[in-house]
Image (cartoon, rainbow over all chains, first blue to last red; front, side, top):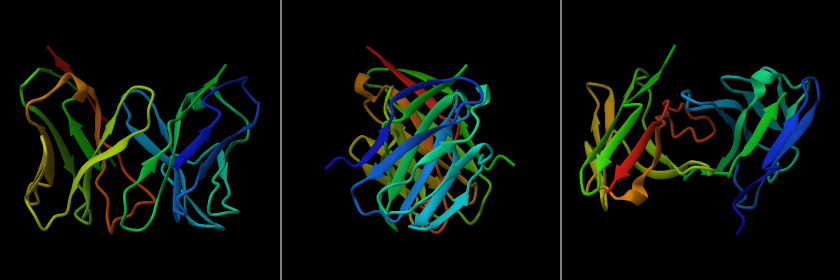
Amino acid sequence: NAGVTQTPKFQVLKTGQSMTLQCAQDMNHEYMSWYRQDPGMGLRLIHYSVGAGITDQGEVPNGYNVSRSTTEDFPLRLLSAAPSQTSVYFCASSSVGNTIYFGEGSWLTVV
Amino acid sequence: QQQVKQSPQSLIVQKGGISIINCAYENTAFDYFPWYQQFPGKGPALLIAIRPDVSEKKEGRFTISFNKSAKQFSLHIMDSQPGDSATYFCAPTSNFGNEKLTFGTGTRLTIIP
């Protein structure tokens, strides 16, 4: 059982480039979400989804897009990378009333 | 508006001692109070959680104490071990809203021999 799988693990982007962070879960969870973690700030919610076809914004959504075409996948798109988006990104999934599972993180550097 | 305040920011405890981390919140609608543990290079993982209908919950060496009137809850680690060295986050939420959590800023715990 793979749980929550994030790819890539590490990525360096140039300012203005676009990319997609992939997230997949094999637990048939309804809820999926993306967080970013910055030093001294804990984890902050970027976008979340309560089911296929349904997404909503979190605390820090600017500069990011998401879609949820299937239950398993929840990709995070950076449209035009900026140095302020240098961070560690975590994907999470859960079912109603159950434990939240996090992926191992994606380290992104924008130069 | 900062809804969740966690303290201390860092903590050093001797092996065998008691580690105490605190979390204060403002939103009275919160009804689920978890602590997450994160090791370097890994994602957070649920450690222990409590509902507001009880004031304390114990799982092995880990205890959550909950004070509803003060809007605070704390994590106590008894007989702290070097393997407990990690960053700990509180993340209270409402209606068991798994889809979106508000995390505290984290406490880096170091257990020294």
